[in-house]
Image (cartoon, rainbow, N blue to C red):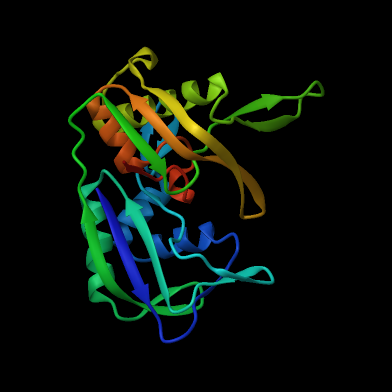
Length: 242
């Protein structure tokens, strides 16, 4: 399920250019405390990998750059997405019932909530990113030190990593045992671009663009609801169906 939330403020909303951490904190602060603690500290596990099962979009408004910040004016909208019904109900209730919301240092209030409950009923869909899709591997240099290698949409490892990640999510959420060969095929459509985002002083690279995705409809549904690729709860991999 995806929830588009529109906010308004009496003053201009000003956020850092790299605002993912602030949006993530805003979401954790506006869901049930027990649920927030569980997702943050534990999450759902498959083969040692933990998944939070929510993601969010970039801010829809184009901000005016002022130094290291964006000024979004007095309106702001994002999409929050999750396959967890308890999560969706919790954040929707908090947004509707709380008139004293803060995103960063900006006091805001909810203006409108729209719910998009996409139902995938076929084995091929076309999607567009609402936040970049991250696919990476941790590799080793000759001296034994580690480094992170991020992959672009037209590299073969991109498809493999995104597919394997989705299988792990499915197994974690449904306590299933799907094999990697049961995954999806993801094919970029047209140009894609690599985005660079600072998150807690680390650079994260992700791909934005349009994709054709083929696979079992339950996997496609999970990809829509939970996000594609890695680092979803940090604001990556949110997609919409075209």
